[in-house]
Structures are given as C-alpha cells and as structure tokens.
Image (cartoon, rainbow, N blue to C red):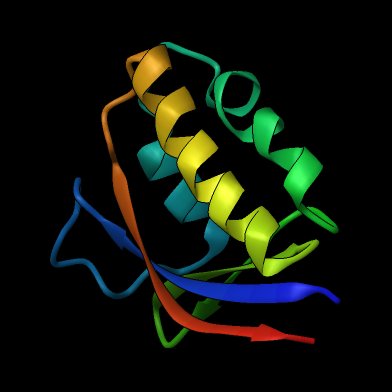
Length: 104
C-alpha cells in the first residue's frame, strides 16, 4: 500500500518569506549549490518512491507530496537522503516538516 507524505517546506535562506508566487520561484531561489543536487541526492531516493514528488503553493507557502512504496521505504529514504546529502557536502537550504502521512 502506498504511503503518502505531505511536507511543508521552510527556507533557511529566506526564513520569513511566506508569499512564494509559484514553485519555480522557490526552486530558483534555492538552487545555489555547485553540485548536482538531483544526481547526487534525489536520484538515489527514486527506488523508494511510487512517483515523482509534486510541489504546490498553498496561500504562499510551499508543500511537497511524496508517495512512497511503504512506510518502511519512507524511513529508508529519509536515512539515505541525509547520508547522501552529507556525503555530497550540501548545506541544508530547507526544512521539510511532515504535515500528514497516511497509507492510501
């Protein structure tokens, strides 16, 4: 059964900003690394996911919804993500707070 997690994205770079116009504005503002975040970190998480994560804007705030194959895959993904990010030397630019998690 799919395990769906919705995250509220918060910015370490712009901590007081809560009026993002769209997802592209968010992505552009946070694309500051000189490493390929997608290949160094994100691609390694694909094996745990049912589909590509979706990002949305709700009242100026950014949310990301991810469908994992199971709750165990979610847990493994979180651990692997942190390890890969640290190994790539990527500073944390955002915080992802879980606002909902459920089997669907």
